[in-house]
Image (cartoon, rainbow, N blue to C red; front, side, top):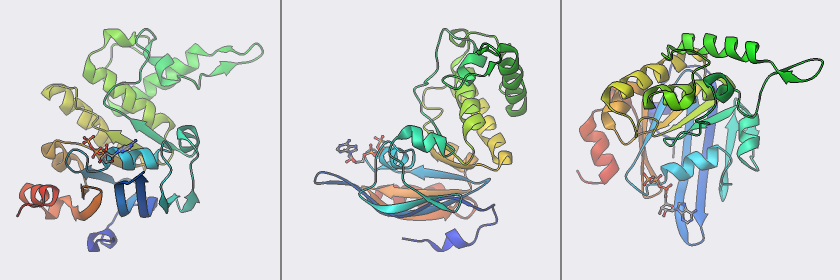
Length: 254
Ligand SMILES: Nc1ncnc2c1ncn2[C@@H]1O[C@H](COP(=O)(O)OP(=O)(O)OP(=O)(O)O)[C@@H](O)[C@H]1O
């Protein structure tokens, strides 16, 4: 299904193109004929009630699940991921609501978790380079932390989520998927994390965000894509719709 609004965009090149994606788990159809293009510099929100298929879609894009049928293109080239690490290697990063950070490690080690920088001749950790890169990144995204050396467990929920998003941004060359990034946060922390997400726009990445908060969706997104029981109900430009329309698309009640 292609919505008219898909062609009326002024953003960058198509970064993620999903075409006729279908996913069934045995007899349960989780996603039915889903098509969406997300462009560089664009934030698209994926909304729908519990069980609508949002997480399944994120898992398909990030290589956790293989679609039953349909195709995915990334930055113009067809891709088929065998697992999450092959999606990561292609430039896709996911931030989940439950943070995947190492609590007892400093911020800079978290940023490079599993991809640490080393220096010759002995392959020792290049802590200085990692700290400098971390500092530059948190400064750029305005993630306010005491220092790149701070231990994760000493940071607030908002700061930690800021680090998780900064890490995703650092490694994602093409696409960042945000799965309820502020679900566990209070109002002030949510506002800070939203500012960080806003700052990602300037990095020419495509961003797909799942959020149950329609206020947040309206604050952040350029377009809103609605799913209901695995079906794609429609895509709207955020500036040209309102909450009432989106709620009735989500619930099917007019
Ligand atoms: N691994 C699985 N095996 C079988 N059915 C599944 C599996 N994962 C998801 N489903 C089913 O697919 C449908 C979509 O679920 P999904 O978790 O993607 O929805 P969601 O929109 O992310 O919901 P929520 O907002 O509650 O997280 C549901 O009917 C769910 O029961």
